[in-house]
Amino acid sequence: MATDEELLTMAVNEALEGIRSGHGGPFGCVIARDGEVIDRGHNRVLVDNDPTAHGEISAIRNACRTLGTIDLSGCTLYTSSEPCPMCKAAISWAKVGKVVFAATMNEANDILGFKDKRMSDAIRRGEDLTPSEHRHVPGYLEPFEEYRDMQGHIYG
Image (cartoon, rainbow, N blue to C red; front, side, top):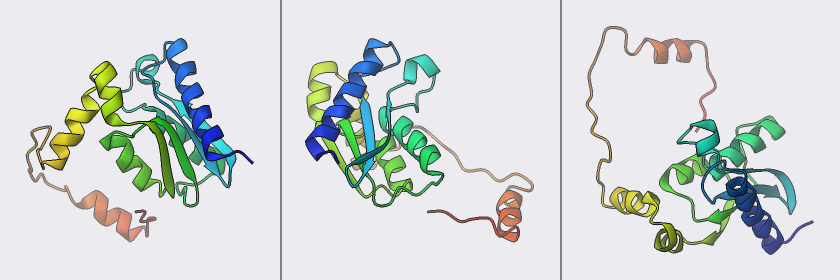
């Protein structure tokens, strides 16, 4: 059984592996339960051409596949840096029990000037980062009604 410090060090090493492989930014993550590693991941934004492939998202996807569930309750997520707003939302959706991070968002921003800090600050101020508009089209509620009628699994 690994300690928090050992698991956090694994996350930092995962970040190093990712950047040395040219996969993306310096973000690595380990997901564990009771000190046992379930899975890990690192930033894959560049190699996958996927702006959502952050280290935390990659680790969540991997851990969910490993466990065969979308519920990571009771798990701890260890990450090399404080999660961005998108990753915080994914962590909540996955019901991760606890997050332990190494670098703060401010520390990462001071070194690299990542947009995560600016985005987090804008979200806290209630700013809409992407203009959006609401429109109705014929049948727009049909997928919701059909899913309800199928008694689809409501997650959340």
